[in-house]
Amino acid sequence: MVLTETVPAAAPPAHEGILRRQSLRESAARTYARSLPIVPVRARGLTIEGADGRRYLDCLSGAGTLALGHNHPVVLEAIRTVLDSGAPLHVLDLATPVKDAFTTELFATLPGELAEKGRIQFCGPAGTDAVEAAFKLVRTATGRDGLMAFSGAYHGMTSQALAASGGAQHTSVVRLPYPYDYRCPFRTGGEHGAELAARWTESLLDDPKSGVSQPAGMILEPVQGEGGVIPAPDGWLRRMREITAARRIPLIVDEVQTGVGRTGAFWAVDHSGIVPDVIVLSKAIGGSLPLAVIVYREELDAWQPGAHAGTFRGNQLAMAAGAATLAYVRTNGLARRAAELGARMLDRLTSLAAAHDCIGDVRGRGLMLGIELVDRTADADATGARPADPQLAAALQHACLDRGLIVELGGRQSAVVRLLPPLTITDEQADAILDRLADALTAAVRTTPGPTGSSPTTMRGTTP
Ligand code: PMP
Image (cartoon, rainbow, N blue to C red; front, side):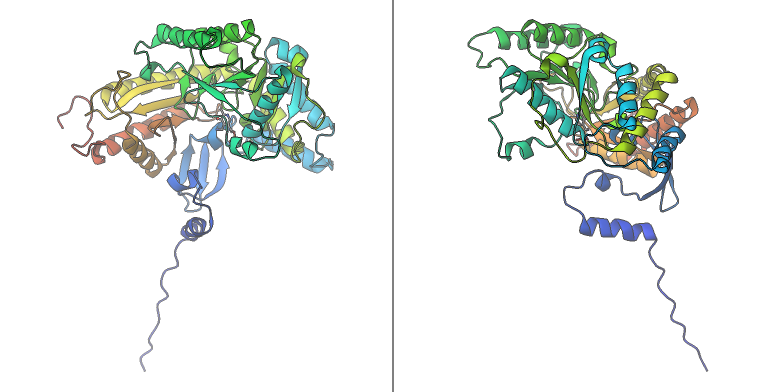
């Protein structure tokens, strides 16, 4: 008798099923999941382990949230302590010992007058909600409506929700030039380019026929993150502070991404020494859990009870994790460490740029680093820089993932590869990140045709 055996088809690995179901069930608006098709199941520090058993060095860090990396012991301990204490986990905006400790720790780090006399508003848990709160605060305090913001800025996703709500008012946002050395619209860059940008802002405010009325506030990022890792010169930040102070325009500084040591100072404003009227904080202040606040000068505190309410403003676990993170960064000098290690990594990236003419610029501050990829075959545009090469950037991100390195893309045209590693990484881990990146770049360069499709992008100094 012949037994026929049906050999079952090999089941697809579980992670493939998860990814397939995700793409079938989740929104077309999903983002990171598209370029990073991995299924994280465990994580510690810089490392994520996927359901496929592969390990990745995570330089996305929850979009800059994980100052201490994944599952840092002090963060886990802080969360466990709250869980084991029987404290309520959700209490709207009521006072609790956990919240009190968080506020004390946060105020201990803030620049001068904000620490001494600042007021804090706990907002809904996302950075964008704190930005909304900041706008509402300055509009109420000044009785004015318009806002000033900068080209390339990113402050969140909720403006349309606000515009569609019953209390919406007409919003006018005036765009100002942000100093972007590499693509300076004035074609000078450096201090001079930044000064020209500042003068443009002044002239808009002072020319009675500029068409720009006195705004309720100005909002800026000290280093534009999503906009392509663009650090503003300290001198320019001081100019913006002078210009706004002289005209009694509240200055809102969005430190959602730059805060908690990321740029090599505890807050990025510390580099320039300016004290904003309002500081917007989220991401790392929650120690990997959702938390967002604004801290502002007490003179602005003119809004009414309930002016910016929200159910989820009392996340005790996030406050405990956040307080532990802030204390750890402060007591271990991690901002200084980010400055030193970031400078060394930037040096290595500069050497990489010298070897690859598809790298137009490398820049950053502390452990917020970016590499702008350009079309080496094209002529310079009006700013004097070559056009961005988003196709190569996407290929590089893919090649990095193949080599176990998670990086994010940013910039006007998604052509800036961004590195946001935890502040806790070792020198060896930093080297491993850069080794993988360099190897991935060589591979991406070999396989990607330039945007014109005319010829493959090549290494500097080699014949095409
Ligand atoms: N401001 C800045 C500077 C940001 O980088 C972000 C998020 N990338 C936000 C605000 C919005 O934060 P969230 O995504 O938590 O709403």
